[in-house]
Image (cartoon, rainbow, N blue to C red; front, side):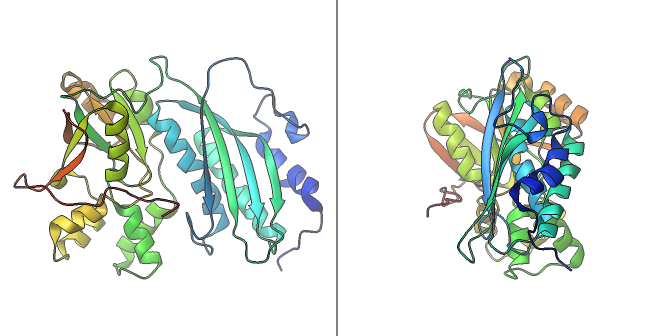
Length: 332
């Protein structure tokens, strides 16, 4: 039987969330109004996720908790930072049960151990309106690499363009969950896991510091985030569509599509990949290869920075593939 919220906000904090702060020096076991952080420089990021927008409302809450942490950890990874801890904000649906919150906290605990972070504070409340969605926010902070923080604005003309991992899996996973696409069980399990549980590239993020010239994480889609990087760096980015790295599952999907170029553009437009898109001077190719090997993270060189502005996607014959480069827009 699912337990109702019988003990109130403060008991929930004490029993479910305070244990997550035991390794957070300065958190005061979540009994104070603020945390005390040691003096020093921190890289700080904040993302929120909303039921029905960033995750399906029927998704298991332990996986939702882990996704919340991971989408923020992905931002730190792209900055080359080492994560330390986080602040948490939760606005629960009116009918939430305490067992559901306990499952959410259990998911946080799993990834706290995995990524060696701790909860430093936050707030939790409930919607008054019936049917209002679960709304979650996390502010993560970490220490910058000794080489400094990677930014979006450091790319120069002539730099190589790279991306980690594979592109388009999360978008296909969401399509599978929403029954818009059909896959084998093996591929469906892989793709839906990529949507529900992204893999922040923290190890290679740190390894790229001092070698990459600009970087950001791919959250809104490869093309959309390439536009952001190009704009902040004052360059144009040329991307070879056939060099975009795909998983076996995405490759099988692509092979079945009638219009290969349009389908490649679609994969490059899907959000939620949480890979790292970065540039580096051509002189750093060996260093990038070494970072890939040391971190055991797949990296593919997919294009180059040139003079101009915007992003151009080219097919195998070097013809331009027309694309919608806006990516995911929360207000569209």
